[in-house]
Length: 218
Image 1 (tube, one colour):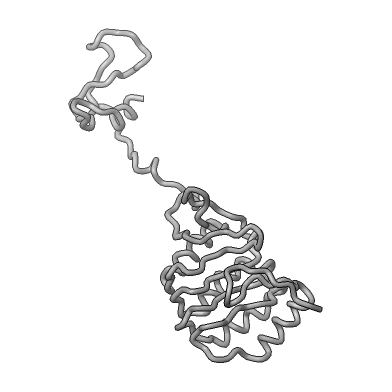
Image 2: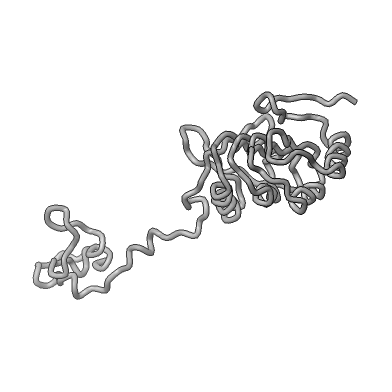
């Protein structure tokens, strides 16, 4: 108890306790000053920095300006001016917490379970590395229905990354508009179209409107 008191109490004028300051050996014992006090130097020192450390990833600083759209079950990280370094930092947050950090009510950082995200939009940013986008989407691989990566003018087509999207079991739509590549392989488009017709007939992401809903006609 004395060690804690010497490490945390304030002394004169709000300063930290000094080695020469006296502290009660037993704070619960009523006795005279000479019988129950000793200088702080006689007590074991505590490393109070250890109290500030935590293994809870939800308390770590995160880059989480994304929003969550309940209707679409979409993680909306569009229009944030993100570059490759920003998405790397967000990837680190998701990797550690195994949840999606996003900006909730009153700008408080909140977390959504991985399984609750079915759509991801990274539209209108400055991302160039498609592999980074695919790594982020992998967290929602089994649930993901749509991705929007439009409006990243320097985003480059990477054959390995774009092919991985064909292994997403439910992914039926990717908005590729206004990016740094001119075409998408036919086998990728065919794969997406097949899953769209069989797994999910609703499209929320288009190039014109933010999170609209269009029902595909049979």
